Image 1 (tube, one colour):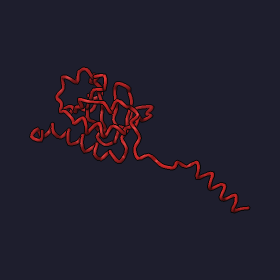
Image 2 (cartoon, helix red, strand yellow; image 1 turned 90 degrees about the vertical axis):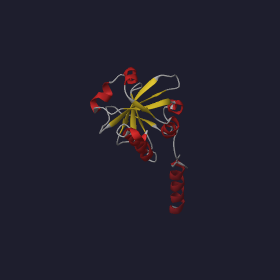
Image 3 (cartoon, helix red, strand yellow; image 1 turned 90 degrees about the horizontal axis):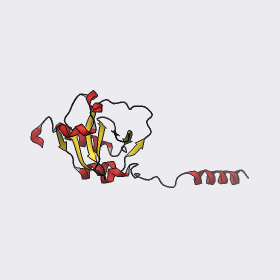
Image 4 (cartoon, helix red, strand yellow; image 1 turned 135 degrees about the vertical axis):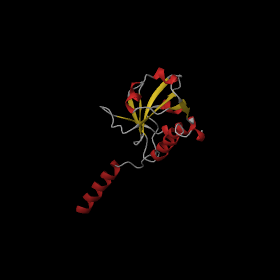
Length: 151
């Protein structure tokens, strides 16, 4: 009797477990797949980044980023449920255009695997497996302002 109950309990518990865990989920914001014209802007004081309106970005010095590289990384970004502001230890100012041609101002964390989209007031997080590439890509792009010979 005991073995019979154990088999039933194990079978029931096992059926509740997911059979497979997806390696990567589709982005919570499908527009990242069709984003274009990615840019990173010249370094500035951290506090100024958040105060610059999106329509003023056209007046700032920038470097273009590779759209395909960014899209491949953002395709698995997930929207975070953040009730209050995130902990920023440094950031990059960036932008892109969505499928409608609207300019999206983005604030990219220098140390975390997340970014903030001003238009929809949302934070997006990249999977742990992509973060090293994401952070390295933005760090190297940012450094081109310090060493223009690398352009």
